Amino acid sequence: MSAKTITVAGGNLFRIAAEELGDATQWDRIARLNGLWDPMLTGVVTLRIPAPAGEGQTTDGILGLP
Image (cartoon, rainbow, N blue to C red; front, top):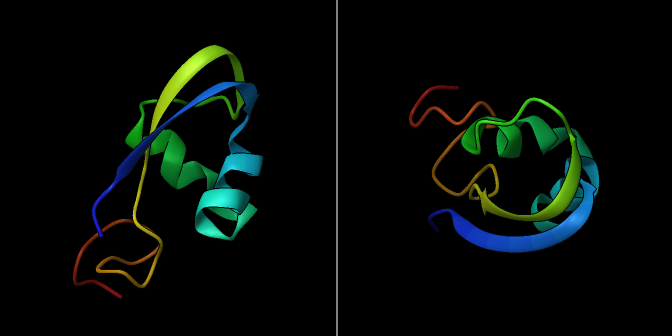
């Protein structure tokens, strides 16, 4: 599965990671994919969500590496 896109109004990347990836600690993967550093979101934001770990990539987002 490739990255999908969602649009949210505020919130934080912890909650989004928990809902979309099943693990709040994966918020940094979403941040890196979207060029963000702050997990707190303001306003309406469109985010790319990476594929869950185990679907073709590791938790660090590098294909084929453990």
